[in-house]
Length: 228
Image (cartoon, one colour):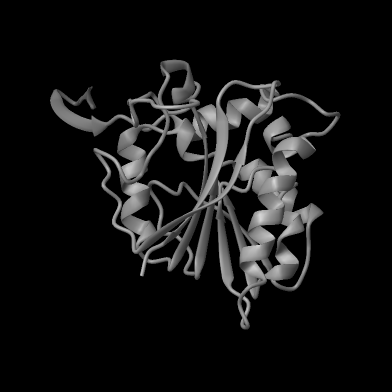
């Protein structure tokens, strides 16, 4: 999608910026995911024990199964309520988010020797190197174009642990959305990286956890992909 800028009687084509950064900044500025009496709050999905604990249990089991700890890249770390509980099980934990103020807040709040924070747009910027990427309820907010750009970088990780909020039962995967405007669940769809149009190439797939609750529609599924 392009728009036209007219300047000095010349027509110049300018790429229209993706809305993701502005949308995520607005989420935190206007506390659209809740308040919790904090400056930055990533919502109940990052705090409610019913949702968080099964994820933590599964990921900790995976991380501690290695004789040599892994370098983990958390792509979309949010307020770091979850990541802070995984750092101790890694060689290095690199936490990434698109919101600069959020990353600056995390840097001043969470400090340990093997922890780094970076402000990056994971669809546009180069990603840090590591063994395992964690992408927890991030892709569900993004357009197919952005997801495809991220997939092209995930091939550099040996492991990818992906968490997505999906409809219960059968559904049409990957119906496109505008980034930052809700998730595919309202269209009775969800992200499936193995299906069209992505066809993510993996070596192995393993479901780590499934969370159902009377408090929300659908299911929250965490899947481990071994890439090579």
